[in-house]
Amino acid sequence: HTLFGCYPVDNQVAHYADYDGDGDDGDDDSLDSQAPRKKRKGGDFMTRSMDSIFQCCCGMLCKCWCQLFSICALAQEAREARLLLPPKMQRVDLLTHQPFHEYAKDVNDVRRRYMTRASRTWVQHYAALSRLSRYILLGFFVIAALVATTMLVHGGFSWGDVMVLGATFVQSFLVLVIVFGIFHRSDLSLDAVIKFFAVGFVICVPVGFVIEGLIINMGVATMYSAYYVIRLFAGESFDAWIIDYHYFLWFVGELLNAYFVAALVEELCKYYGFRFIEHPDLLFLTGLDRTARQAQTQGGVDSYKFDSQIVSEFSRTLEHDDDPNDRSKKRTRDQKKASLKRRDGDDDEEPDLRTLRQQAAAITTGMISVAVGLACAENCLYVFFLGGTAGSAGIGAELVILLFRSIFPVHALSAAMQSINMIRKFIEEKHTDDKHVGVGKIVLPAILLHGTFDAILMSINTYIEAQWDKYYENYEQYDDDSFEVPYNSVLVNILAWAGIVGVMVVSFIWYHIKNHYQMLSLASIEQKYQSKAKRSGFDAPNLV
Image 1: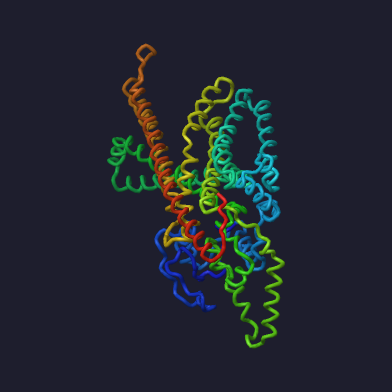
Image 2: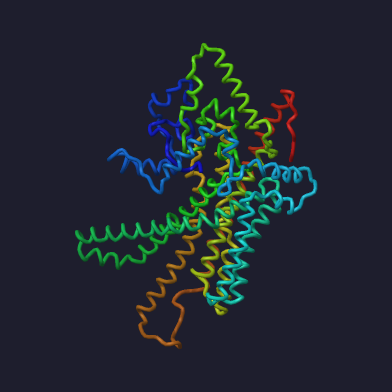
């Protein structure tokens, strides 16, 4: 979608948030002639990362661009679609390619019933589902049944394991029922929740595991290389130093693993998983809320503010190809534009019934849905493969792991923390002077929560294993009568629980305070626009 792809012109300068200043669009060739502005600190993460790679490799050596799995051809196809098709025809679902307008009206009708306190049932939400969401639900039940049958017949699992698998999904669905079904059913549609959950479950977890594996292997290779280089000069004294400080190095490695492998990768996967989905409820995040007239007159450069693909100036210069003194041709062009606008049906677009606060709540609910999908897939992996044991003897251990991972909703809370700055970037930026919210600011609070939570658990585990190593070194021969735990288990458990509960409480308080003041800010913006509407003679509807 809009997060990845190639630029139409490599040296073209963007007119959006990654650059300081407003820019001047008066000249058709101003983008090609003017010098690049200084990039602001905290620019787009993917843009900066790819720029660094290209400057180190292809950009400096051979002036070429990397191509992988025909991604440049796909980007070219998407770019041509942006230029040739009106925005309404670009609003389609993944896989099924169903246009948004085929189910957006049903979604809005359900939302209108909730706002007017009319008849409200889950059946209405189901009736408003798109084809993609229906396929996702059908695929989930079919695959879950196949997995359960395979586990029973060929996997050596018992009915108890199947019940634990069901409880793993029920726990995740319970979180969504509370967040969406009780508090935010009029802010975001069930259709969007299903798609966001599927992205977290199907895409974010595999991508996260692959990236974490690559980072770990690259880190290990780098450390081994550094070890042999240093040992070449320092000799055996370096080995002695490592042996003396190997517990400290072990602890530092666990901290790096917690913050820069687990937390950073998973939070970025959740962020980009959320941005990956385009939905009628969140068109204002994608730029697809443009009208056909805006797309023609502005060429997609300014209106498509958050697109990483900058649409070429070609579409804008088309209007000046004819002789400006030929009024008949100009009249013909104007008639074609008016006909195109009527054909695109911009006047028939469904209005967004939500206030700014409801749009903000929709962002939070969507990000939590992605996080719950990721957490559900992680729970399945940890319960059955990375922590639990198969068979009836392991059911108790599986339930303990599931219970522990359920009572501390780290992923859901970290997603809510991400939503604070997401709302600042995509809603508040339009009405305030704050233009410096990048991906780093969005994910940083979540990384601190997630990383600290993992670091506490990893540090406690490192301490326990280190104590057992020392115990085995000092007592090479021991029997059951003289066996004793080499650490104070009560104190260790108290410290572990106090640490993780403290981190969760502090993070929740931080989110509650930030969310409270953000809602007040959005309410003041709403009141300001309502007062302007009344002064202009238009009565703005007060829907909530």
